[in-house]
Image 1: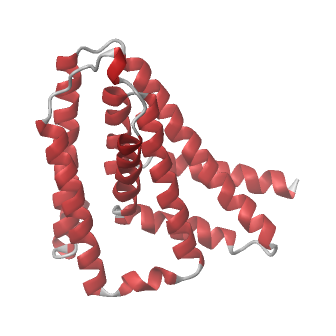
Image 2: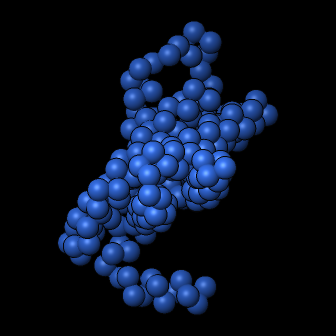
Image 3: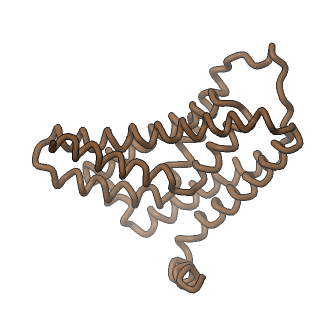
Length: 216
């Protein structure tokens, strides 16, 4: 019963994480719609791998690296620039459905989507802060195998939900024309640019942004 409780708790944490809205979330949907399930799944795998890295960092207490104000600023600026660049690229391209012979598996594109998912997720400070909570809960278990099962349940649930999002978005693709997908790309691109700019400047005006957030 204890193991069942641990797994259930991990699944609930994973479901919570899967519904966090950030750059990776929008990129996941946009990629699955415009490029298909396979590309979306590679992006989802990149997100999952970044989650593993963040769990490792939080688990071993290396998150203290980001307690430095200068380190947080550098982290935010670099992450913001990466997201803005991808956002501009997404917003300015036009979608054209490839011919059947062009839809051949391309390792370069798969690596690109994997890297995109990894960078977008790991560049989001909100995700870093989130992982401190379940890792803290995991440390409350006395046995190491219980801690591992709990964290695996979270990671597996999150990956499974991301793949489900990819499958649903891919199904929507058949009802969309190239023009509609191009519009979706541009909207998502603008959203990513806004996320990137916010991430890059948020560490320079934390108090002002916090006050604005309270009044909204």
